[in-house]
Image (cartoon, rainbow, N blue to C red):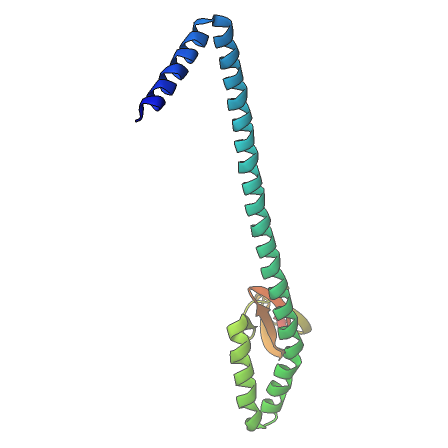
Length: 170
C-alpha cells in the first residue's frame, strides 16, 4: 500500500470512529441499514417468486403442448381405424394379400400407443364393449363376450373406440 492510501484509510477510520461516538448518528445508520436490508430481502423474495412463477409457466406450457400433440396423434389414429377395419374385413373374406398391410399399419400405430381391446371370452365391460346382441344363457353365469363384431381400440390407455360385441347374459 502506498503512503497516501494508508493516510486515506486512517482518515476514513477516524471519520467513522468519530461518527460512531454520537449515539444518534449510530441509531440513524443502524436504521438505514435495517431499511436497506429489508429492501434487499423484499427484492430477493420478489425474484424468487418470479422464478417460481416462470418455472410453473414453463411446466404448464410444456404439459399443454404434450396434450395437444397427443390429441392430434389420437385424431390421426382414429381416422385410420376404418382402414384397419377394411383390412380385417378383407382378410376375413379370404383376401390374404391385404393382411400384411393391416399388420404393418397396426404395428406402426401400436408404436404410437394404439392397442386392440381383447373381447372374446372376457367379462362384459360397458366402458370397453358395446353390446349389440345378447344371447340368453341357461345358467346364471356372468355376462361374457361371445363374439366380436367390430374391434375396439385403446390409445394411450383410454378407450378410443369401444368394441361392438355379442354378449351371453345369464
